[in-house]
Length: 271
Image 1 (cartoon, rainbow, N blue to C red):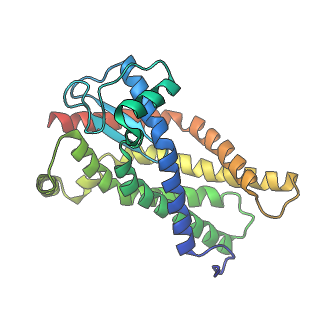
Image 2: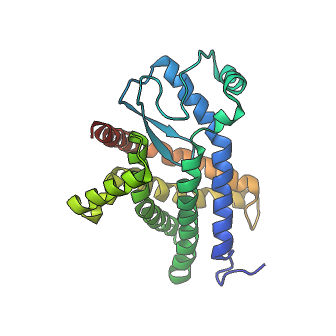
Image 3: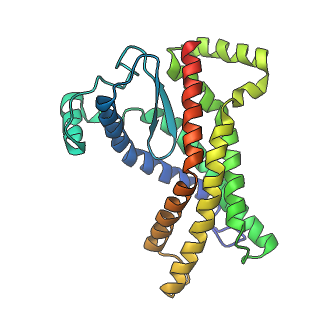
């Protein structure tokens, strides 16, 4: 296996690893979030023209209810569930096991490329900064994580806007092209990045805090266990701890981002 000059894996290997991780994450978490949405729906039914957010661990999906409880092509009218396990059983029995992976295609189309860009950029930036500034710089993961997330969000943002338009109303690809062309003609190319600000407000601080804490916790655990390299459990524990800390500290930004996303969805519905 060839390695990069910095001693890590090559960019191609980084892309394959991050893409595979994103694929497994989406396959594992999507059924859990489908059940969560269905349980929420029976408690507070979604009204026509209103939006709700669906997040399967990799990215948020904005859905708009078209006709009462019939929100999207995959979303069924809520069956009465008594709990999480009961929801799994009834959805599988009455709607088929495929229904547990509803809404997966947009994740595979968008979240996997975004994850590949994000993790590969982070690894390359971290190694580059360490080669220039020395491996002891504690701020290097923070800077690399923030820049990598900034780049990934910027690249994917136009696709997010297009996806929101398609989910807010039934559009053919021809109608979608006309809609985008008219938006660009009226407001310029920057209109494709509308709504990018709230996403950056949450994701950039989260990524900076996550990688900063991840590297610190991983190094501490390696010292405690007297290991030169991190094992799977060390990396897993470091990721869980740093993810929890980053999520708690950036929760206010997440609230703002969610409200802004729903407002944008409501605007698309009114149009």
